[in-house]
Structures are given as structure tokens and as C-alpha cells.
Amino acid sequence: MEPLTTPTRPPKVRARAVTRAFGHGGGRVHALGPLDLDVAHGEFCCVVGPSGCGKSTFLRIVAGLVRPSDGQVELRAGRRHPAAMIPQDYGIYDWKTVLANVRFGLDVQRVPRKAADARARDWLRRLGLADFADAYPAALSGGMRQRVAIARALAVEPEVLLMDEPFAALDAQLRTILQDELLAVCQATRTTALFVTHSLEEAIVLGDRVVVMSARPGRVIAERRPPFERPRTGRLRRSPEFAELHSELWELLRGEVQRPGPGDAVTARAPGRRS
Ligand SMILES: Nc1ncnc2c1ncn2[C@@H]1O[C@H](COP(=O)(O)OP(=O)(O)OP(=O)(O)O)[C@@H](O)[C@H]1O
Image (cartoon, rainbow, N blue to C red):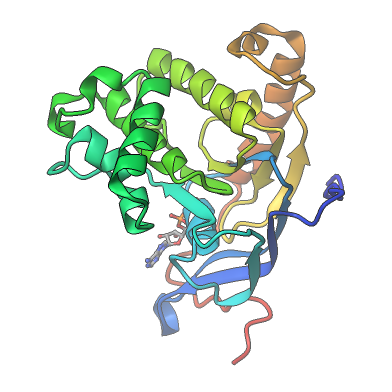
């Protein structure tokens, strides 16, 4: 495995020996770790790994939604609301208009209504939703709902954007378009991003770094830096370097997918966990 790079500034996210187990006794599942990961300021870090290896669990730990069983996660940020998360199901509210959904985080932060409306409308415009501010989510397509979720997360100007397979439910064309849009926005705002995906293609296109996790309990087994300059565009998908990296990472992942994991019913104590 290549060593983690040492950023010149302290990492924005630092995870050390993070483990998480669920359940008790014979039904205890060792879901994650021990996992070490640094994400540098402004870095777009993609995490890939076999299904059930603990990717979402790790993201939720970084978001502060789940506690690790052991280990530490530090999120170095100057603001009160440093991180925003886009969950798999988008997490938008059907009873609120598109504008109110995008403004939601700003309302929670008690940003005055006029300023919050202006910022929300600006994000709607950037994501091509300006004409839908007063619509309700039920009237939107899947891709538009996804854009609302992205706009809502970015409207709070988070220092760290956490995304859990945000494009999983979309068709291939729309996924490509939204990948390019996300890339453009994150490059422009230099937002630090931790992005979980099943798709190697997506990870290579978006990531400054692609981190590969083992089968459950997920640990970092490899990381690669896609050799593409920024600003990037989706055209890099057609380059030989892309194909080469994709095939290398796919071999690594295939080994993990085929590796028999510990049975869910087996008692598995998180390594290093104090009893
Ligand atoms: N709240 C929970 N209670 C019990 N087990 C859980 C809980 N959350 C996750 N797990 C278990 O932890 C393991 C890791 O789950 P997690 O959702 O983090 O994996 P994942 O890598 O994100 O999977 P996928 O790629 O399929 O979304 C799985 O075995 C899952 O069943």
C-alpha cells in the first residue's frame, strides 16, 4: 500500500484506528476498521469498497451521526457547521418547496430570511433549478431531486461535504452530467469532499485520491491518485490512463469482493476495543 500523503496543512479530516461494531453477544457484527484516513484541505477523496464493508458507517461517523466503538475522528473546521452530508436517499423534504429545501440548512443556522433566500436561489441557479424554486419535490425528476440535495448541502458552504453514493439511483447519462457538475462546483469552491461510491469510474473521475477498502470489517487497503490535472472534465474517461487505473483498482476490488468475510453471526470484537 502506498503511504498516505502528508499535506502541508493539517488534514481537514483525520481518522485514527476507527472501529465500529453493531449488536451484542453472538449477533455482534464487526462492521468497520481499524481504519486510518486523512483528508487534506480542498481534497476530493473517494472511497470505494465491497458492499457491506462499512463505507456508510464510516461516513456517518465522520458526520457525527454514529459514534465509533473505538478510535478517533477529528474534523478540523473553523465554523459551527463544518460538515454537510448528502445521504443515499437525498434526504429532501416532500412537504417543503424546492427553495425551502435548499434554504433548510441556512434556516437551521438562523441566517436572516432575505440573505438565506438569496443564497438558496443562487445555488438553484448554479444547479439549473432556478425555474423550480416554488415547485414541490414530487414534481421533480430523480436527477432534479438529486440537484436539490446537492444545492442544499452546498448552500451552507460546508468546509467538508460528505456524500454517500449520491448518484446511485440515477441513470448513466444523468450520473455523468451530475458528476461533471459536482466536479465543477467543488473545484470552484475548493470544498473538501469525502465521497462514497460503488462506482470505480465515478471515483476515478471525481477523486484527487481513490481509497480502496477491504471487505468487512473495512480497512484501507490501497489508495491511488488519478493522474489527471484540474480542472478536470468528463473527457478523461476516454484516456488510456483512465482505463489502466480502472483495471488496476478493479483487480484489487475483485479480490475483496470474492474474499469470504466473517459471518454476521460470528462474535467479532473491534480490535483494540476496551472491554
Ligand atoms: N445500525 C446498524 N445496526 C446493525 N448493523 C449495522 C447497522 N449499520 C450497519 N450495519 C452493518 O454494518 C456493516 C456495514 O454496513 P455499511 O452500511 O456501513 O456498509 P456499506 O459499505 O456502506 O454497504 P453498501 O455499499 O452495501 O451500502 C453491514 O454488515 C451492516 O449490516
